[in-house]
Length: 156
View 1 (cartoon, rainbow, N blue to C red):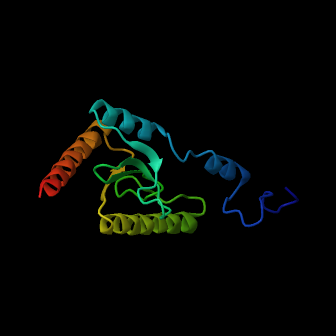
View 2 (tube, rainbow, N blue to C red):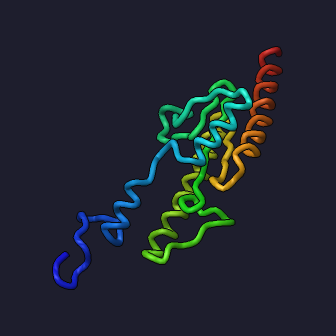
View 3 (tube, one colour):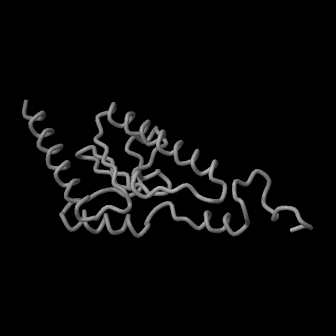
């Protein structure tokens, strides 16, 4: 830091301070506590899945859980990052940036849902605050419906 200027940050950094930068860089991209809880609940129901995989390899969108046979992509959305209607609050530091970031994430989520659905995939979005067992039960119902429909189609 020099005199009364802002803290030293790399050129083009979005962070408002070095502490904020360190905090944001330490956020995990996968294997978060809510993700692990959901995976345990889904596994306990006997479902097997791929973790952190692109449902459509040519498209740069990674789902948290992928059920290839049933063509289901599950996304576990964080309340802050995806602007949960129940829990999202705009940050006090750099509020315009974070509000815009959350809206861009939501728009990308909608675009991802559309792309996958048009390709024949079912998309299930789960909020990080949701009970993992309830979310797993919703997933199980969707999985069973998709597999039954696929079986019926294959028999024709």
